[in-house]
Length: 306
Image (cartoon, rainbow, N blue to C red; front, side):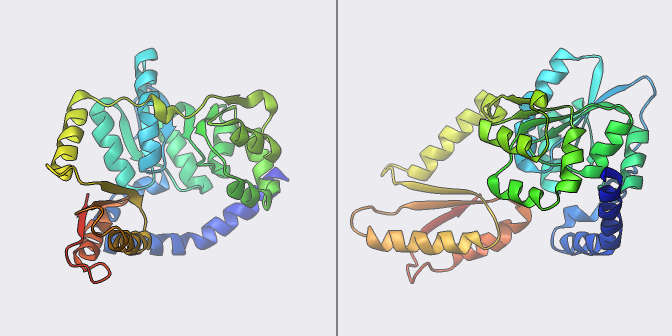
């Protein structure tokens, strides 16, 4: 059933490949960063020297890349004879990986979960182990690693009830996949219980908590944060509302709510500041234009964008 499920899944993936490429092209039109490095998405990455031992860490985007920082640093310290290859799927994730690790790791996009792309990547990168951040589960990638005796670990694993219910609809595909995962380090016991219910062996589960709490900020970042706080609050120490990592469609709702709050508290709180932080940099200009528009006919509403 495992082979049949993955065969059906792979056929569907190949049939949808033109749509995947069309979506990538659409994103490339809107965000120039998506225009480059397409070959990497199909496994065409530079081959590595045969004497290099690689640990593969996959962090799909910005959030997972941030969570991976303490893990990657710890792996580099504990296994100096190994080199890490850190992959992601988005340009924003790529920029975060480059900023965090520079040339101390190899970096590229992860291959699409098609058998030939995955096989091409594994033949070139030759990882000794795959560590996946949070919940980026791809059946063909995990099966290919299992076939090559490459252990697969899920770090900082999380699985919401909504996602678990979605996975239940494709149990013939999910259960064998979870059976091929070597270990899961889950954020919470509820996440672990959902993984077990879907087919992960009890012996493969460990609840570790969220490793994002292991992140540490250097002194420069702390000083910059203090300076920003001082600049934003000013001598009047005005209140600040921060809306971080917003997605398309959320900014308008937040701006409208901020306008209502400002109207209701008029006379009680003077000159509050709303700071919007879009998750994707390509949306910065669009959200900046939204912020420049009057909010509920309040032209003096103070809104900033990062």
